[in-house]
Amino acid sequence: MAVESKLILNNTGHDAIIVNCLVERGVVDVNGFGGMWFSHSEDALVEHNGEVYSGLHATGMAVAPLHGLFRMGSTFGGMLISGT
Image (cartoon, rainbow, N blue to C red; front, side, top):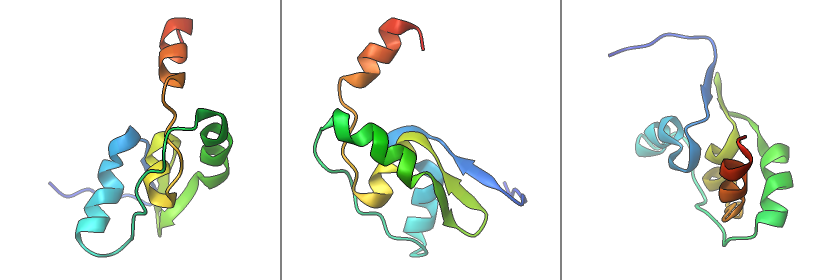
């Protein structure tokens, strides 16, 4: 399957599936995750959302492995319970 687009958003979570397609081709580097430190990861994720490669933007937890950011950890459970 081939897809053509001017802008692609990778918001595929921890797996960063679209970014990893570029990693496999040697186009971008991924630093992996840091430890679990949700009080720091929330702000860091917001700061690092943005363009990864021309026309490819990463958002949400797909940003974390790109920049070696901390994992969110138990915060997801809080979001789930709150209905977010």
